[in-house]
Image 1 (cartoon, rainbow, N blue to C red):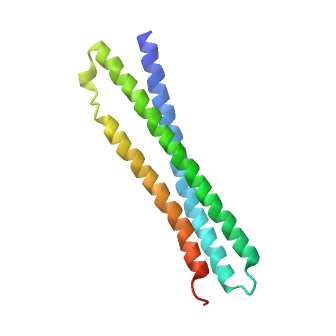
Image 2 (spheres, rainbow, N blue to C red):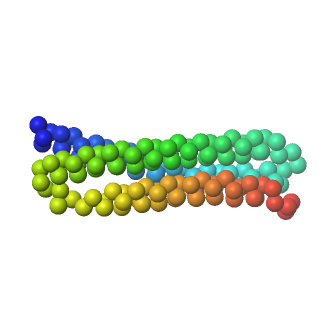
Image 3 (cartoon, helix red, strand yellow):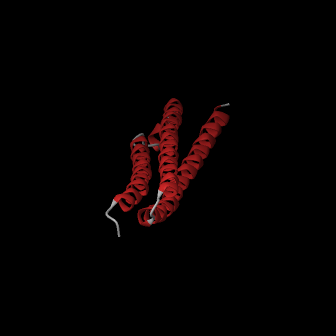
Amino acid sequence: MLHEVHQHIVSELHQSSRTDTVFVVSAVLFNLVVLGINWGVASTARQAEQPGGSDFILVVMVLATLLISAFSLRALIAGSQTRTRLVTGLIEMYRDQGVDKYYDPQMLDTYRVRYRLFAAVVSVLAAIAVLVPLVERFSGRA
């Protein structure tokens, strides 16, 4: 039974990693694409005589950027918490079996740092995808 529990925990760790990867890659790609779209919309709106429609699109895209990034960050937090719980369980299992010397518990700190870096990348790209088009839109007329 211990082998099955171990396999289940390892399987959950793999699934968690794949899910986290999907959220990070999706958020990064989304923010980069939206940066280009928003910049184009902001530039067009700034040059237009009546920029109402373009401004509305810009607002919708900025809100979408903030929401997608917030969802991705929340998913990363949940992924980090899940990984911590699963690895803690593995360490306890290894300790009970007397093989804990083969797994460095400081790996948890490494995982935490990695999740913080993922969150920082998503946050910085979201900020850029929001701020750059807004600066373009509200800078002086060309």
